[in-house]
Image (cartoon, rainbow, N blue to C red; front, side, top):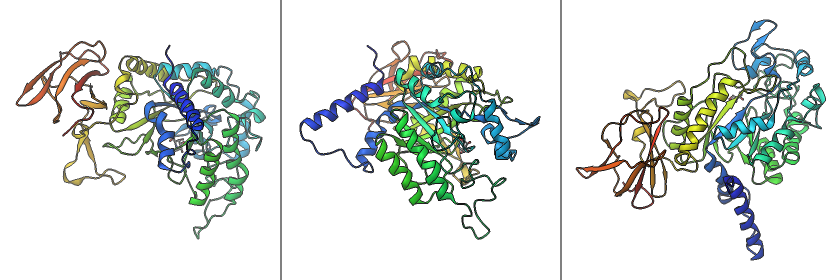
Length: 467
Ligand code: FHN
C-alpha cells in the first residue's frame, strides 16, 4: 500500500511518542529548543515543493478598478487604487465562487507533485476566508456564499493526507483603524516623530491574535502559519504570536516573516539564493507576475522553468512554495494548472532526486561571483549562475540532473569516493563510467532523453562525498 510519507511520518512519530510514555521517558523537549525545531521541520525538509494559494476579494476586480487598469500585484489593488474601506466592502456582496472545489484543488497539487498547501486565511485587506467570531469581515458573515472556505479545504486536505498551512497577515490590515498599512482611510502608521499613531496593540489583541487562535483551534492540524510583512512587530509582539502557536499546536511551523526568527528562513519573494544555505529555508514564488488573480496576467512560467527552479532550490537545501491565484469563480487558471501538471509528470518519474534529498556537496556548478565584486540591487554580491546541471544527494547516491546536453564525456566533480555504478533514473538504463587521469567520467548518451531534465544516479562508496 502506498502510504503518503507525512502519514508514515505521523504514524512513526505517534508510535515513538507512545513508546516513550510507556518507558517513562523524559518529556518532549521545550518548543523553543533546537531538538523540537528539528522534529517540527522533518516533514518540511522531506516535502520540498508546496502550493501557495492567494485567494480573496481582490480576485473580483482582478487588476481593474472602475474601468481602469491598476498596475502591480493583484492582491494589492485596494492599496494601489486607494479604495476606501466602505467601497471595498461592497466586493463581499459579489463573492460567490460557485466553482470552488477543494478536492479538485488538492488533487491538482498532488498531480503537480506538491507536498503541502498554504492558503491566505487573511491577506492585507483584512478579509477572512474563514468563519471568524472576532469580526463580520469574513466569508461566512459578509458574502452570499456563506461557506467557510478553510473548513472545506482543510477537510479535503485531511482526506487526501495533504498538510495545510495558513498565510496570515498579522501586521497589515487595511480594514482596521489600528492595523498597519491603510493610510488613505486612517492616516499613516507613524507620526513625523517616528512614533506609532494608531492603536496597533488594540488591533493585534482584538483581531489578529484571536484569529490566529481560531485558525489553530478550529481547522485540525495546521502544518504552518505563514506570517508576512512584519511592520511594527517588536520582539514582544512577535513573541505573543509564537507563544500562541507553540501552546496551541506545538508541531506547527512558523515561517520567517513573523518579526522574530521562525522555524525556517523565508527568502524575499522570488529570490533564490546563489549558494547552499545551511538553515532550512523556503522561496515564496509566483508562477506569473502576481499572487492574487489578475485577468491581464497569463504569463505562466513554463514547466521547464519551474522544474529548473525547483531543482536549483533543492540542490541549495531549500523548499519552493509556488503560488497560484484562483479566479473569483474559484478556478485555478488553466495555464498555471497545465504548467504544474507537466512538472508533476516529471516528478513522478524523477521525484527520488528531489524529495528528502540533501544539497550539493560541491557548489561550483551553481555559478561564480561576477568579476570586480559587482553588487545586485539589494547590495548582495552579483553571481553569474551556471544552469547546465545540478546535483542532489542521499547517503551513497548522487543525483546529477542535466538541463542541457552534458559535455561528453562529463567529468564528475572532485571526490575521493569510488564510483560503484551509474544509471538513468527514468528507465534504470546503465550509464558508462570511465576513469581518465584518476577522475571518473560519465558517458551520457546523446541526445539526453528528457527535454525537461535528465537524471543520472551515481552510486558511490561511502555515504557522503569526501573531497
Ligand atoms: O505583500 C505581500 C504580497 O501581497 C504577497 O502576499 C507576498 C507573498 O510572499 N508577500 C508580501 C510581499 O512580500
